[in-house]
Image (cartoon, rainbow, N blue to C red):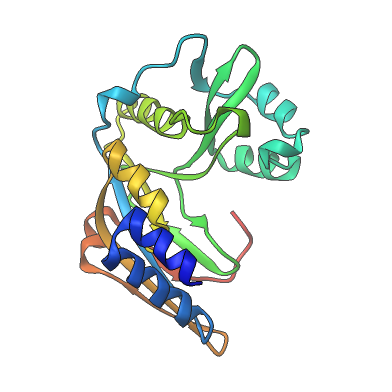
Length: 219
């Protein structure tokens, strides 16, 4: 543990590392999460162009059904069918016919855990479930797919993209801030004795961004 602490302190600084280790300690006693609500309205221009030999676009049903048969993409056929049935969309970066990176986008309340749902203003799109295939990692394809998708959604009249990152996921936070995301609020979630206590910070209100505990069929 000491080696982990030293390594993360070098990478992220003492304050952020201490906060992460506090969260880890709390998790041993109760289930506690802090989500940072993030908004992307303008992306860093460095990430808006496709690398040579690649093209980016929303993926059609045929492509999604094909990649769902490859376990490396973590896209089970049942998930793809359900997501498409809800009207969700998937944007991908491809090298020829090979999918290198993808991200999913929703327009309606979306399930984020067993009985927690994320609601948001439908003037925005919500980004969830992204992945870059192992051979393509380290080339910032994750950022490129988000930047290019933002342009596509804004062209369709949306104000921007929303997402969340766990507050102790320091590497992901560093990545999204580099792209241009900004934090607008936080959601504090405490699960104790089978019940959720949830506080959505005031900054979430402008985006209609809130987490609620609901028991219903999965989205």
